[in-house]
Image (cartoon, rainbow, N blue to C red; front, side):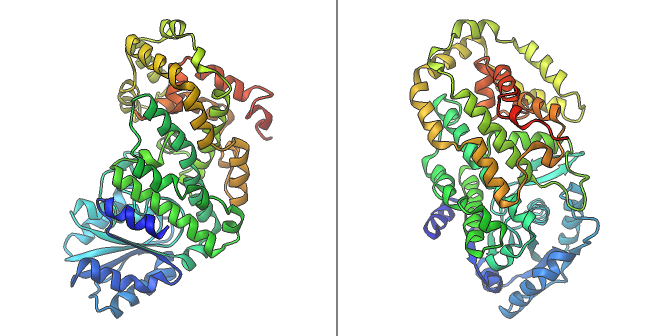
Amino acid sequence: MADLITQALQDATDTKAVVIGEGAIGQAGQVFKDLFGPVQAVVVADERTFELAGKQVSSALAAAGVELATPHVFPGDPELYAKYENCEALRDILAPLDAVAVAVGSGTLNDIVKRASGELGRRYMVVGTAASMDGYTAFGASIALDGFKQTLSCPAPYGCIADLALMAAAPQVMTASGYGDLLGKVPAGADWILADVLGAEAIDQSVWELVQGPLRGALSRPADLAAGDVAATGDLVEGLVMSGLAMQAHQSSRPASGAEHQFSHLWEMEGHGVDVTPRRLSHGFKVGIGTVAIAALYERLLERDLSDLDIDSVVAAWPGRDAMEAEVRRLHPDPRLVEETVVQALAKWLPPEQLRARLELLASVWPDVSVRLRNQLLPASELQEMLRAAGAPAHPQDIGLDWERFRATYTRAQMIRKRYTVLDLALETGLLDALVDELFAPDGFWGRQAPRA
């Protein structure tokens, strides 16, 4: 894994140093000095992470001869949320300081510091406190703006430190969230295979290997993760860091995000889980459910021989552009979201002659691509078992989703991003509604898991 990280850092646009290991927090001072030289540092944390690790980071910085500004510590109650107002507040605090921010925390804290530093045109460093997501080394920050989450552009950290002893001791739900996020790379890889063979987005093989090469190993010990095993945590952390570095190298989230993330993004945009106490519903938990949902859809799709698709009938039934827009507006009535959803959905709409060409290509490659997809994917039931072993939700109602809303996500999530996924393939082949019906039939995957009382 160390060799892969070294390779990934050569191609990364922003991050120049990653240190992973037990006791790595003690290297924070020297890493900072090597990266930034003789400049002042300002530690940014919340009350919990400052006590947990911020004081140690401050000591390591001071021991290396780094001048320290007064740390900025966000209140711990209520729980810190990655909303744009917090980015603005931190930006205004950092602006008059001639200092580099050192984020000490996990996803939310890192995203706030990332965006605030990015708006100031400054580099920053992060010391992660939990293996909770792949965003430590990713470009962009997931921030709530105008009432819903979206990815705002900003550079990844210049340096990243992950102390495995610290992360293994983090609350188990945070590790489980990271596991759910990483598990999503399995169907995301299948979606990239589809996009590649159908000419929508070519696979970059070197970037593919950064994520998919270590993926199975990083996911192989979910029960040990739940027990706080340091070595298993190390595998997970490295997989998450590699995912972020791959997104840097590709300048896109495509290597790490497919239809399973569109499920999660839809729920996040609509605010699902924001008001859950004592801790907001994590991104990784929603991705985990989306991963199972998409794997189940693939299973139904792969039962069909698309080389025999009735292309004439499918093209004849294909909706026109205006009809497609009307359907998007019907299914996404939220005025905050609908206009951008229309833009994203129509960016993927094809005129009938282009649809025919794509379906003819699909039919010709299906015998080979279906084998590649089967080799990439894991059974949905196995993914559920892996999530449960890690202590993560594995059923929609585990995250409070209404059964009908969950079912409708298969149709609605296809519309919110222009990225090509299995949801688009199912729609373009005229099979999406039938596949969903099969999943929720009494003998289907979700039908066998009827909504709980």
